[in-house]
Image 1 (cartoon, rainbow, N blue to C red):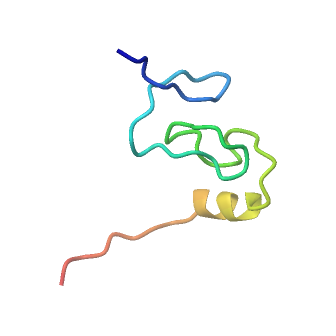
Image 2: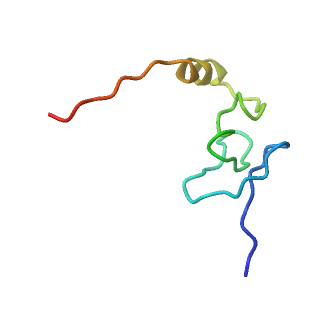
Length: 64
């Protein structure tokens, strides 16, 4: 049986789920906590977008 893949962040070794995707820049797989370029120190061009989304306030949408 193959070993479960783990998060590529240096301080995290969580087992990855099917929903955990590769980073589009560095091609490494990270858990949901470290998937943002800012969280795993990737040389990503979209750092401003990641920071804005991280600090955004989202509202729950009620079902109509």
